[in-house]
Amino acid sequence: MRTGTFNNYFILVQKMILYNLRIIFANKFIWFLTGSLVFYLGLSVIYVFSNDVSRMSDLYGVFLFSGILLVFYPAVFGIQNDQDARTIEILFGIPNYRYKVWLVRIVLIFVIAFLIMLIFTFLSSVMIVRFQVFRVTVQVMLPVLFLGMMAFMLSSVIRNGNGTAVVMIIFGIFFLILEDPLRKSQWNVFLNPFDPAYDVNETTWAIIILKNRIILTIGSILFLLAALFNLQKREKFM
Image (cartoon, rainbow, N blue to C red; front, side, top):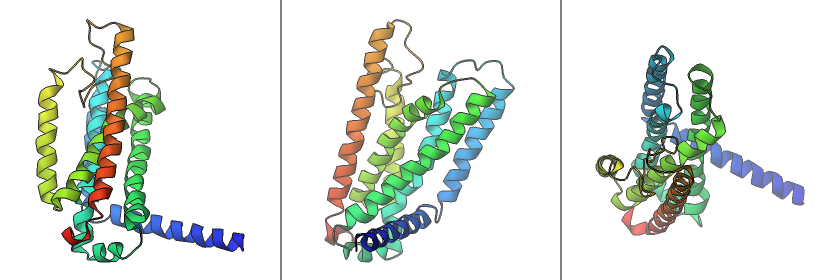
């Protein structure tokens, strides 16, 4: 009996994952994936034939922007795509749908992005400059996770993909403007852990990086919880 129940549960989870993968890879996602790939490969080819890149800090920005491109479309337009396809009505009919469907979907988005970024970092480690692939990928994915969860939360409030995209671009510009003034601060979303400030000692820099990563992680969790809470308000999406 337990074996049959487990098999049914496994089949259900498998179908849910396949369904969400089809949604994630649908519509315009392929263009963002292509953009991320072209951006990464273009700069990588330049770096391969350049003698200017000798440190991991030089590649961090490339990885970060590539990761943001990977999660941007599914995080920003996911809810609108459900509304346009009328699947949002079906989702509201599933008990605890926000956990069974959207939580699975958002996890899949970042798992896929993480795996793709692993490939990018591995190739760069082989072709350009040696570094710890897994460690670098994790460091890159933390701000990507933060921005992706922020986009997901905003999309649950704005309920329009184009509107959410505009707001996220404004936030992105705002964060970029603050990047230089907050270069040595744990509040810098784009803080490069591999590019320590010249007037900060190693121990202090390690503490700043740790605090920054904790802030990004907590922020990501809060954005996710806020988005799931907003998705409970059925009347706003119908």
